Length: 300
Image (tube, rainbow, N blue to C red):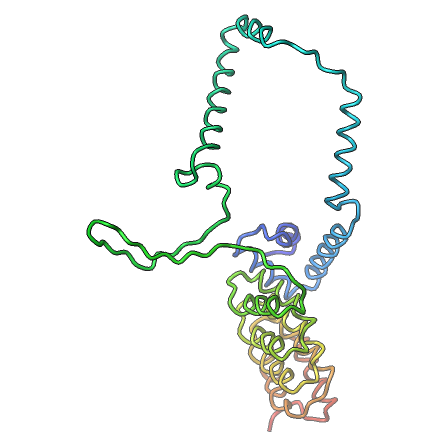
């Protein structure tokens, strides 16, 4: 995917309106392209500013609409009262072609009221407005002419709370580890990155950095681990990523974070990286880190 294609897809990507294939292509490109990564950050900042505008508040917008409606009602002339007999006389004088759409409107009204007052078990309107339910059939049995079906049902609901709420953290951690949508995994890590003082959160970010198949998710995990760049476990994981990750953007972020601290225990890994790395920036930064640690660039 070219830069021009990515820039065109960024607005839809931010709203989650692209296919999974396009989403992964955008994230992979952004991970390796600083210009497009900057463009994505600008667009997200723009959306954040829109969300902060007070004049877009739903309550104020509703109040404004009500004021406009009252003003319009005061300026409009009062309607002329017409008796029901006058309505009937006017209707009887309608031209035939105009009666056809009137009849069609009557049929639509009949269908609406039929659905409105049909019981829910027969597919009435309330059944259509019910919360979405996801069902899985577990077993089917025929017992003397009676069919028995065991169904597991899951009803979708919204859970709200602060990031300090253990239930919210548990759901976000579950999304990081199990959610199939990489966009949701990225957003979940973005919310958890300020809670890395939790051992469980830090472990989830390390696991995502090592095993997640999406480069955008791995980059977000590195961002969340910046505060713990001096931690031994974090540094060993970053060194392993530097040696094995197939995305150059991820390797660039890993070496940039590793250079903030010196750790003699990863010298051997860094020496292997210098020999195998095909990205000139990563190779140069790794050599500089080895020199700062007074270690040889080559292995002997």
